[in-house]
View 1 (tube, rainbow, N blue to C red):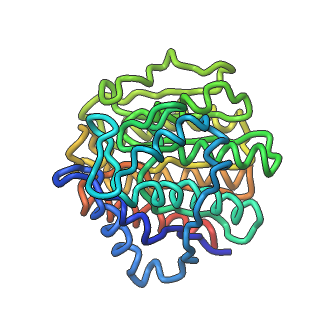
View 2: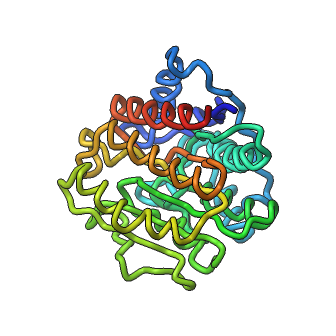
Length: 311
């Protein structure tokens, strides 16, 4: 089987103010990186629009309606100090959630081996009733609930290696005993949450903090000692990945020192777990990453490993 690559031109229509780190050029850089001959075998698919009931798997109707009402006819509107919307933002957000749902369907249907969803806006900071941190809806949490409620899975693991804590995914899955949410992140750093004491309503949340200026060696040790044993014990039937590439040494928004090799390593080890417990079924989605060159190179390294493991 092959690796699915889900994206859509609508995700280029989510426009943020000049100088904003979560900008259209992020997706353009990734799309260009996916054009090389090493990635020619990707199964390229359009991310479909999520339906309203898909968003309601995690968010109340009032939240969806508020975001929808905030979309401007022209220009750019601020939802908070960091999070902005433009006329194309709602459609882009529906593509982001829909791409994750379609990727789960394809992987669980054994149509593809694994998948990477390259969409924006990202999702792991969006809480149940609050858009924040550049995010409108909880794309990965929605995909997890879709796998559980509609495909009948009993155990879904979410591994978030973005440099920032996935507070939104944690909030959306806090009371969901069928999930294990794991977030590794620099601490202290925005959004200020994600201490090891935050363990979920059913001991279903694991937060692993990484010191500023630490690098790949510290990350690898933390995953081998803390994260992977916990995921092993959970024995997931599907692994979802919040793939933020902002732990890279060149990223302007944080102070970790990972390299492309570190992203390749963590991808391979996640695939090892998936091979053991869930037939290799991994769906990864883009979160952060704000240095364009580092983002493109790291995403390409991530996808190359997915392709090698999906063959």
